[in-house]
Image (cartoon, rainbow, N blue to C red):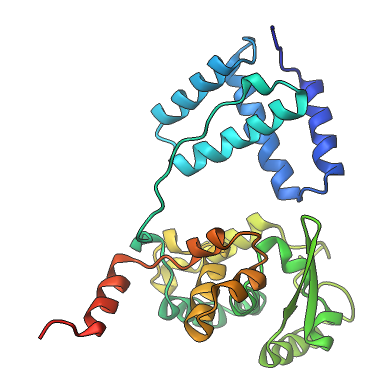
Length: 280
């Protein structure tokens, strides 16, 4: 059967994602990947063979396997929505990594240098934002749940993908945020807002963090909002040693997802081996 993808189909799929209560970030990414596949097809039919060809093309273009699988998942989900099950393709098999890339692992000392640099440069909002993400483990998309009401209660309820989880806010963080809000005249609603009163965008937060790198002496490859969540995860686990509890705090449905956050670098693993003192 000849299946031709259309912009109208993609628009209907967008509506489906919206009613399925997918996050705005997920919807944006899925649509971007599906449109990339449509562009690559250049008028050809949607088929298993062509989807496999796109997978091969992405590999030849040196996309990392995880990115390829993410893009294929979007297209496969679109095929499922359309009822084109025979067009779906298998994802690349990726062996679970033993170690995390040193060039992308942000450690505590580097994190503190970023905070110090932000403070020196008078970027109080950015400093508090980084402290908030790193001390709670929230996603950058969940920053909007840090409100006046939340810091008064010392907790916030986050709703994502049909699930609600409660995040406790450290008392010291609440005190700092109350002081910041009072100085900025923020009496209700979100605390981290742009000059126009709207929520801070993911891109804006990313750019502001990257601008600290040179002065802080931290490699740009290590500085992005999600890495603060990784640092929270490793720090939390080092204290409680409970991966199930950590999964609940991070909002993960699978322990396997949480384990990714706990992968150490080769350097850290080498230090752990030395501390075992099993060689006399």
